[in-house]
Image (tube, rainbow, N blue to C red):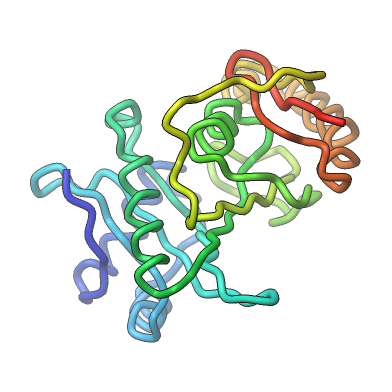
Length: 225
C-alpha cells in the first residue's frame, strides 16, 4: 500500500467519486475547485492506493486555537479494504505530515455511536475527546447518516507522542454504545434515534468535565474520576 499527497487536477477529481462510493451517491461534494485551492494553499489531502486502486482518502485543513493544528475534515476507506490497515496508514501519513511542519496536534470529529471508530480513534491512536457537538452538521443526506441527528465527538491527537504500542483497556464506569449502530439505523430507525438521545445525555457532561479516559472495545466509553 502507498499513501501519498494529492494535488493534481486528476487526483482532485477522484476524491468526490471515491467518497460517494463510501457514503452513497447523496454524499455532499467537496468540489474539485476547493480541493485544488486547499492543496495549493498548504492544506492536506492524501490518498491510499493498492496498486492503481484508490482505497482511502483523507482531507484536512490547518486550524489555529492557541497553536497551529491540522483538522482532519473527512477520512474514508473502501469497505472492501476496511480490515487491511488503510485507516492506520492514512493516520500515520497525517502524523508524519503534521510533524514535518512542526504541528503537534491533529483534530477530527466522528459519530460517537460508531463503536469501531471510537475504538480506533481512542484505543488504537490514543486520541482524547474534548467536546461533544450536538447535531454538528445538521441534516446529512448520505446513506449512512440520513435520518439521524449528526452529533459528533471532537477528539485531539497529540502526534508528538507515538500511538500506544500496547493497548490496555482502562478500568472504570462505562457508557455503553451499540455493537453496530449502522445496522440498527437500517432495521429500526426509532431505536437508533433513542440510542442517539441516550448517548447524548450520558456523554455530554463527562466529556465537558474531562472524565472520559478511554474506550473499551466491546462496551463503550470509560469514565474516570
